[in-house]
Length: 59
Image (cartoon, rainbow, N blue to C red):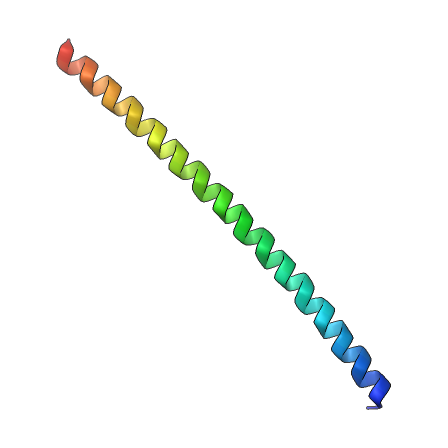
């Protein structure tokens, strides 16, 4: 392998690594958003459950 070929190989692996890192960041962001949605949903259902429970006790 010549020096030029080695440099090109290094450059291509670097861009691949950067691309993979970008993909990982996007995945983490997606998961974070999904977890946020789940938590918000759980909070809403808990609040609704408490309200219906209070109504049942009062009725």
